[in-house]
Length: 97
Image 1 (cartoon, helix red, strand yellow):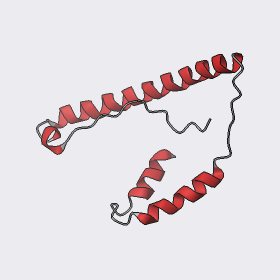
Image 2 (image 1 turned 135 degrees about the vertical axis):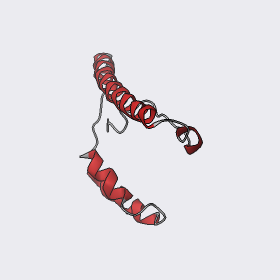
Image 3 (image 1 turned 180 degrees about the vertical axis):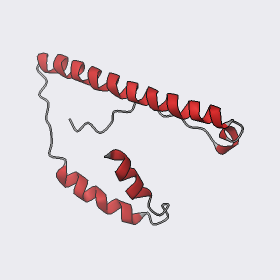
Image 4 (image 1 turned 120 degrees about the vertical axis):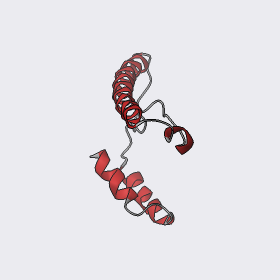
């Protein structure tokens, strides 16, 4: 178990669509999207815990690997994509805190 995924859906829309919306509509989409994401993550974590208990009760051995070595190796990947928007990695890391 590495808990790499807690978001179960993604909303995608292009500039052609979003450009037709008023600032109020955009704010409503952003706010409700955020709220839906938080709720979805809450449900996912709750259901994960339930499923984990059920699986363990059935005799499944759950292994929690050390993710440190993977994280260290994965950091090297970012330098392989210099075409990223400058500062994007740092912005994402700040949001994750």
